[in-house]
Image (cartoon, rainbow, N blue to C red; front, side, top):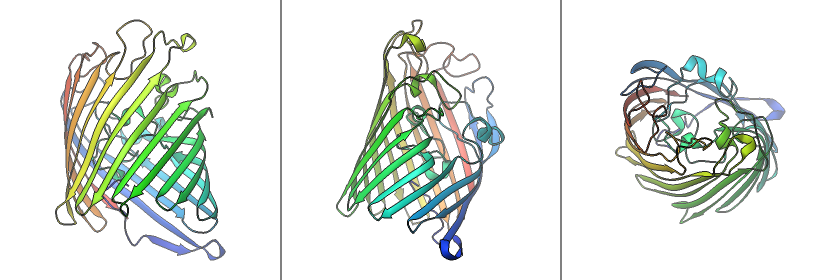
Length: 353
């Protein structure tokens, strides 16, 4: 969890005998929102659930596991909202994460199963992030992958490498890796994550966009945590090569930057924010992959999120604006997909137990 929301410090647990202690936690929340320039199939006003999940895990010993079961919604800026009822069916299923972790020694571990992606600087579920809506850069990254991941930790250094199915394609042809190093007792952390499709994947779906799943992508992240402040700027780049077999007549790429931050006023009251920019290369010609609001388009956003958490209860609100330029009619906002901005207000409340 990126904060400012925190998990229950006294999670539910039971003694499973020789297996050790099993922890059972969860998230239950609902949201309401209004937005301008809704796209066809979306609504200006809506209310919905955002999380109804149970997490079961074992966190010690040489054999550990994590299972996440339930339903969820995945709201993100500049995209059509998918309802809580449909999201799990159309994305990652009612068990979006489930993996075994083998840890023979403290410094080394191996994870196998449905894993959170190493790529990107925002997480999949609303409660994991500083804002309710994920950002424009998150829209370019995978959320969960199926595969295996090896981890090495020694002091301030953390390194991991994974062989997986990229954007949930069920084709094991992605290689990803991450490395982070902390300084000043964890106040400053520098991270690099990167990944690429090592072959070609013709399959696509809602969560497996054809262009992104045949890309190379990396993130450079700096995190500062001290006192009441968390400041988290990062850069993100991706590249898709020309591939006539996939219908990509031209190379295209994204180049992006974002700043996430939060400030704690009282330990229960926080203000979080995000500002970001994403640009894409290419021109509106046949065969150029569209990665945003038409080939060669760019966009920026700003989001502010006041947050309150007392014990397991939380409530927060998003106010956000997305502006786009060099868009292609038919790929932007509004009922005719020709508007270049969208304003959104969202509130979310629930419990982390």
